[in-house]
Length: 301
Image (cartoon, rainbow, N blue to C red; front, side, top):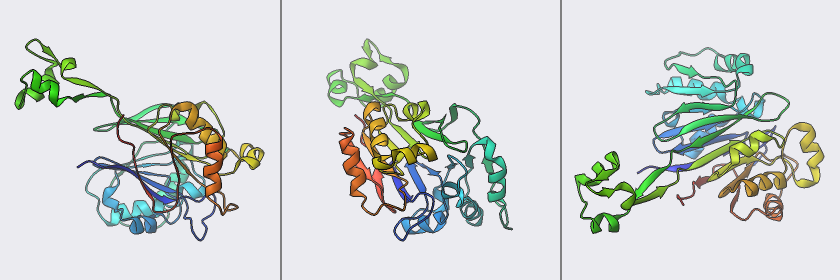
């Protein structure tokens, strides 16, 4: 049975707190696992969340500030220690290649797994998996930063009652799916359009075109909300978003499930992020993330 869910490994911005680890997010997408922004302590958080190195197929780093990348060393070494049998690909801003090199080879270890380096240098598609295309968009932060988006191709859902009405059963169901017709019965006669799912991951950034492009029609948007709205000027100066700004993006983009994360240590009441997001007019499903939370992707429309 395929699983599509977000496993939250850490939710703190800049520094960890007693209750929040540095950033870290695993997206389970069917048989693949995509690890986003492994901050310091991610390897231990994986253990606490029941995530193994064997679950990882891609690592996506938005930028090379420590709270988003210091865990790379431990994660990559664990991939090698556990001798993960499948390919693992790492995506990160090309301008930070020297940081990636330092983190990958920060200490001595036996390299048994070839992690494929696939740096990002421009907007657009990065890779195509069995059931998705991975895309990147440039964000607005003091260092080069990219957000990521998974897009599942649109498909069709077979309708059992229409198949039965046309006497189509068994192997003929697969045949009409492959060929588009069976005799004078068209695929459209026995199925309906099924919109592919979309997942977006947006970390440290001001509002910019890339944020809106990543969020557009997302079934789930994981987005930073470092500050509350009272600190909007501070957010702009340091290249971040407020809860209200993040929720406004989700509202305008038609996001179904909004996940707020990456909280400044100055805040102790997570419910205030929810209040401000609702005040901004977002009416969809809303989660204020905490460490070790699991959030399933919404079911298809």
